[in-house]
Amino acid sequence: MNATLVLSLVVLALVAGLAASLWALMRAQSALVVERAQSRLGDASTDILRAQATATAEAVADQLVKRAAEKFEAQGVLAQTKLEEQLKPVAVSLAKFHDQFVEDGKARAEATGGLKNQIEALLKASNETQAEARKLSTALRRGAGVQGRWGEQILLNVLESAGLIEHFDFDQQPSMDTEEGRRRPDVKVRLPGNGVIAIDAKCSLTAFLEAQEALDDATREAALDRYGQSIRAHVAGLSGKAYWDQFRDERSPDFVAMFVPGDGYLAAAIERIPDLMSQAMDRKVIIVTPTTLFALCKVVALGWRVQEQAENAKEIAVLGRELYKRLSVMGAHVAGVGKSLGDAVGKYNAFVGSLEGQVLTQARRFEDLAVDHEGKSLPVLEALESAPRALGKLAPTPAADEPPILTVRAG
Image (cartoon, rainbow, N blue to C red; front, side, top):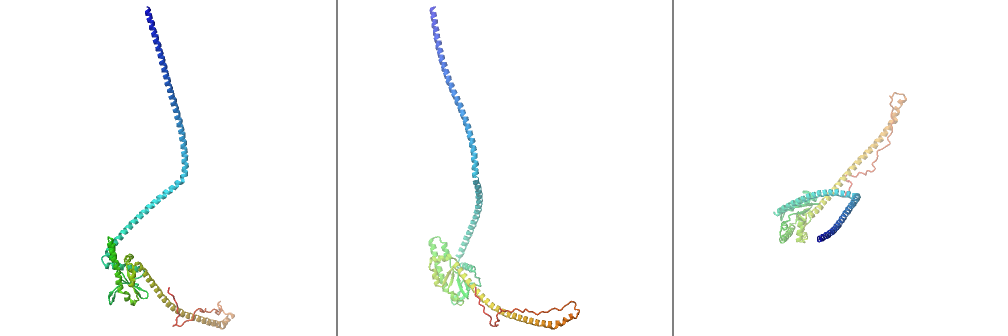
């Protein structure tokens, strides 16, 4: 029984120890759980507080941002309003500039269109001119006859442009038979005082045209050399014809004019022969181009006008003499009329005196005798005191065969 009791006590002791251990363990675990729970609760509180603080900060920030945005927006509207007011003149100027730019653009477009049309017309005219030039060049290469007719036509145009009239101031191709044979200049220009200038337009341009169409410099230079020599040969030929001797009766100057139908043609010849002009003048040949011939013909036209004015002055002098003669005769007639009027006035006054003194005095006695005269009375006649005005400024009438001489100067 003791053993059982001891065993029971041991068992109870063991159970009590185990229970105490379990209780201690449970308390430790409970404390640990509580500590962990408190720790977790603290963390949760911290998170809550942090979350609340974050939410509060975000709300405050949102509110601040909202207020700042509202304030910034208000300031922006105000600044924009002020800026618009300040930029309003600039906007008006820009609008005007835009309108002006649009108008200028339209004007430029129109001008560009017009310029384009003009350029197209110019190109068309240039192409037509080139085509005509090619035709002319082709025609001129056919022979000297074509070149001669072309030069004669240009010569005629120059003469007419200078104011000369065909068949009056110049003649084309007058034929002349001389001992050396038939010779004929292209144009004979008449000068005042029965003078004549002979002009020849048969200048050969074949070598010049060949030079213009040459494909290399050597061919071009050779053609220009031939052209210069042909011009010099033509000068020598004209000099040998001596047109000034054939027109000696018409007081022709001792030279002949050689017409070259263009300044470029003469320049090309002078480039090859620099002393060509002096050589020609030594041979009594004056080389002229449309420019120089125009000036020469203008001088001729001026001479014709001066001669016409001189002839008109002579005619005026003759008309003046005749008019003076007729005025003299008419003045004599006027003087005779005045003298006759004076004699008539004297006769009238004598007649009035006789009528008044010897007839009307007797007739008025009928009034004293109370004769019925039906209310009619005799008029009182008075003598005329005025006389015709004498022509004091009328010069004495010259003899019919000695009319006065009037001097008239030509303009």
